Image 1: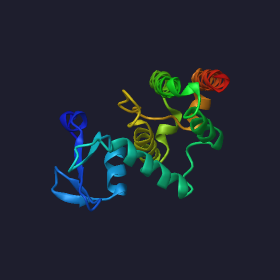
Image 2: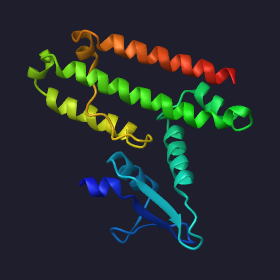
Image 3: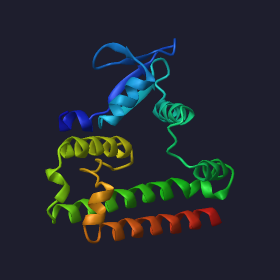
Length: 190
């Protein structure tokens, strides 16, 4: 995918029949297709054909809800509960900034880990199938982080064995987890 494609949102139009139309390929798409575009690193914008209203947020939430209902649980119950509470409290104005900062810390931590890994030779790289596993992890993490504000996704993620073999990697992750827990405590006090 070219940089221009990544930068330009894919326009999806919703017709009165609720069908979703991909304006680039001139065909109808499903929510799963849209999720696939996003996993591939593409920005998506969904608009109502008649009113011109931006429906992107509504459809992204629907995609998340469908994944969660199928047992693909990414969001812990406590986080979901706190999100529901945030809509009825003063925390509503703080939550978006908190979430954005948390995900930014995660991206920065991943970048730091990748820098640490690239400075040392990887003993697992000689194992058969390692490259395929590394590519799979990279695609998974890119899919998980591509929708986060300002993210271009991580370059790749380390395996558990890699982090044990690289000095500093597990300490970085521990620090990231500590900072995230601290931010969660602050938001729950609001």
